Image 1: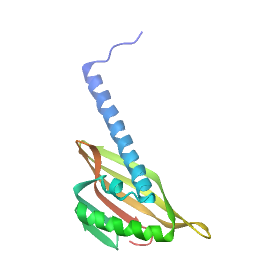
Image 2 (image 1 turned 90 degrees about the vertical axis):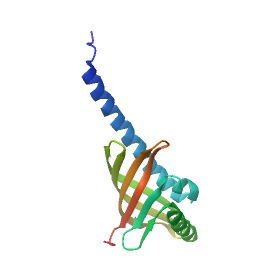
Image 3 (image 1 turned 60 degrees about the vertical axis):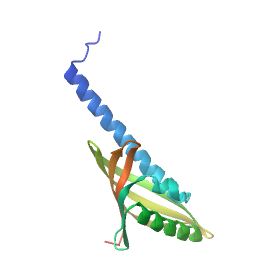
Length: 150
């Protein structure tokens, strides 16, 4: 026989469930972001950012606002097309949710397929800020620190 939960226990369970759902949604966005980049789906990639976002590649560039982020991403995706198919591998992700904002830190590895075969072409860390929007979680900020770049 089970005992019904007290209202205070129900609230705690609801909060824990919401946190787990939020973390799962953010992990899915991180995976989708890599797939959009690899498939060079610019508008899908950009669509995961809010209008007043920032994107930074440590030591290389810092873009503010969706228009600047889109232009920079377009240039990167065109450059990637010239060097071969890429695959972003995201690992070691830690997500922390605080109501309607969240932070995720992940390691990344980029493998590029070239005529001579696949090669690891980049590794590093993503530090991502998210905000909850009516459409779900979106990137507020993304900072990519490539190993060896600072």
